[in-house]
Image 1: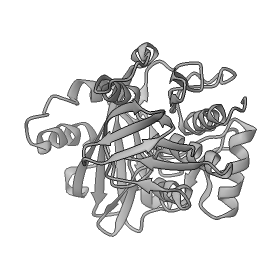
Image 2: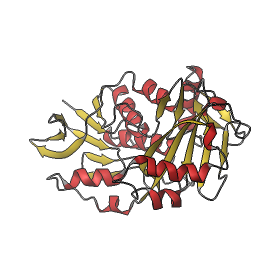
Image 3: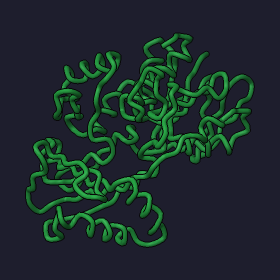
Image 4: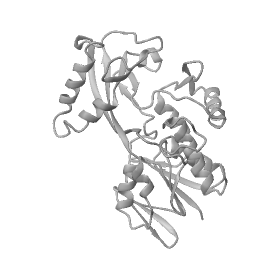
Length: 321
């Protein structure tokens, strides 16, 4: 009996799982987080909430547009702003879209895969929680350094050299609850307002929060410099440094609460121009860093994650995309 195991329940994993299930193939997903979605992440903050990973997505392919049109019809997604390449947002936060996509799928959260073995024609996925999941085929969708770590713990004869070419930048995000309403740009977003801040998003203006809550993304250079700096100190040291960088935009007296999200693998520095990597006959690696050859954007995004998931599923089903 064919059974596909997918590690990672972000956009790539959810898309691949849905495609395989449509064809009647048994499939399950394992994710180390407490919710599906990966970087489609939303956090409750007091009476409000904030997207603190992906804020929106764009559409360049007809394939993705067809599904997005369905999500719009189901009132899960709407246009946020932009005419040439509209920015689409999830109506109730990006994580709500991930949960909607996972509704009919078998997902096990809080499961961190440590190692993979192959015996008697089947893979065994060993989790930190001392469980073993069996599968005939596997798609790994975590960021490649995490995939390499799992493969290094495994006894598989897998060629993982291509994965070592992928390098990632971290991102530090401050989630700031305000005492009073403040407007940011026409749509609740401003980009590159200073030499250290990449983006400020006001979720009340965006329409997903009842109260004024901001996500403030520090840029690549600042995040890289500070990411591990206070690893062994209290988080408040890092938040103090961020407060100092944002004071021109948000004075300390406006801040009701502030918390931190650290994304170690936020952005791919150099993408691969192939939609997945086959590192064993029935073991694929996929994700937003894997771009289809016709994709001219040269950067990872939610759509590339979706298309990679579709391509990986098609490969396992013996179809060509």
